[in-house]
Structures are given as structure tokens and as C-alpha cells.
Amino acid sequence: MRKLKSLFSSSIAMVIMMVLCISNICCSADYYDFYYYEDIDKIQVDTGSFKYSIDKDTLTVTITDIKEGTKTFTIPETVIFDKVYPVERLSIGESEDGEMYSDFVGTLKTINVGKNTKSINFYNCELTALKTINVPAGSKLQYLSLDSCQKLRSINLPSNSVLSEISISNCPKMTEISLPKTIKYLGFLDAPNLKVKIAKGNKHFKIKGNQILSRNGKKLIGIVGNKRNVKIYKSVKVLGDSSINNKYLRKLIIGKNVTKFELDSFASCPKIKIEIKNKNKAPEIKNSAFRFAKKGIKFYVPNQKVANDLRSKLKGSKIKKAKILIDKKTVYEINKG
Image (cartoon, rainbow, N blue to C red; front, side, top):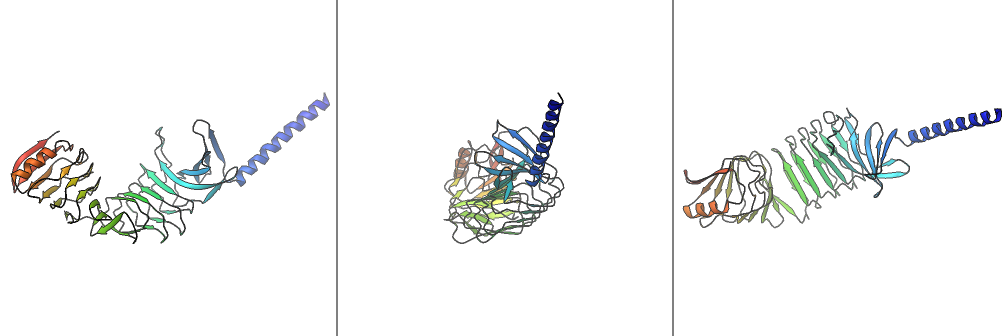
């Protein structure tokens, strides 16, 4: 019996030692808590400074949260769990179950991007303190999406940047951004002081004044800055999807060169005046071109022929309330609630 008790005591001691050893290994691996979920096939880890998930299929890491009160966050190139994993994504926002991120958005001023980071996405996060994003030479960053960056001043991209998509909203402090030749998609919402530059060799865009155009100049991609009156350039034939998305705009002058408004081309414009110069016909208007535009748009046309044509073409555009005028006289009113 005494031998059994002795063996039992020894076994307990060994178990305690093993637990202590495992605990030390966890600390050396720089994490203190983790959760394993079979249903989503991911491991969730909390380091105390940030949270991340390991995708067991791709063997890559996504940072999903940052510690409350953080002022400067440097995205690590790798993390150590059971082995070394590259950190490829920073993706933070409201989860599917409604759980919110930690309260770091009011303090985070600087993000230093890791070389392995391919994607940064903050959704439903008002980054009210963020001022600077530093991207190192040789970075793999391809995608950047930020919400409500009221104090953001600079995104420092290297000359060899491979960024292909950028989308930023509410960035009134930004004055300039230089984009690489690899850029394929860009969107800047509420950027009254921003000037955009694009490197030579880009196959998708060119900048003319405050207008972002397709490379051949035939499609309007967007309007930046705070000009109230904008005349579309003569090379433009199409107002592209979401191209009129500027809250400062009050008057848009469209020459006979513009032949088409694409789907959602008037994405979230205010009650603007649209002056159509073509004396023969109105541009083709795709279904839902005005579904996100505000009520009260006024169209100024040169004659009754164009007024009739415009009225007919606006039927499927989802426009809510508008007027068609010749000089100062209203010839048609549209009211769909």
C-alpha cells in the first residue's frame, strides 16, 4: 500500500512538472491564451498585445484585434505558436455575432506594416486618432481599406510598392498620396484637400486635374478635392460606377462627349445640378444609376427634345426626386418618394 501511495505521489509530481514545463513553453512562444475551434478550422490566440487567428489550411495568420490604448502598432512579420507562421493580414471590425473589437481606435496613431502583410482592412472602425501608416521597402501589401480616418495625414509607400487596391473614407487631413504603377482599384471618400499621384507605367488610371480617369481617358473613375463646380473632360465618354461620390460637388457640367451613366455612377452625391450640353439626346442611363443619390437633383437641358429623352431614360435609374429644366423653367418633375 505504501508503495502504491509513493507511486501515486510521484505520478502527481510528474504531472505538475509537465504542466509547469508546458506553461514555460507557452510564455517563450509569446502567447498566454488560445482557443481551438473545429467548426471554423482556426486557432484563436491572445498575446496580451494583440489577438490573431491561425488558418490551418493556409498556415497563415490574421491579426483580429489590438490591445486597448495602443498608440503605435507594429505588425509582426511572423508569430510563433507550435511553429513559425507568417502574418499576412490585419482585419479588424465588427464580427458576425456582433462582438466588437477592443477600444484602441481612439488612441492608435501609427501603424508600421510588416513585410509579410498583404492585406489591411478596418471595417466599421472609426480610426479617429490614426495619423500615419508606414510601409517598408519590400512590403507585400496589396490591399488597404480604412474607415473614418479624420486625422490621417500620410501613407508612406515605398518606391517598389505592390499595392493594388486602396479605399479610404473621411480623410480630410490628407493632402497628397503617391500610388504605385501596380494600383488597380482606388477610392477616396471625403478627401477635400487630397491630390493623387500615380506612378508612370500604371495601366489602369491617369490623373487630370481633380479627376481620376481610366488610362485611355474615356471613363471617369472619381472626383477628389472640394471643387463645387466640375466640368467633365472632353475625352470622357462614360461616368463609371460610383464615380460621382463627392459631398462637396454642387454642379456637374456634361458635354456631348459623355454618352453613358453606368450602374451606381451617382453613388452618394448631394443635391447637385447636372447641366447636359448635348442638343440632340441625353446620355444612356443604366438601371440604378441614381439609387444612392439624394433627392432634389436638377437637370438642365438645352431643349424639349433632350428633356423628353432624359425623362424616358431616367425611368429605371432609381432616382427619387428630381426636376428637368430648360433655362429656369421646370418642364418635368420626378417624384418617387
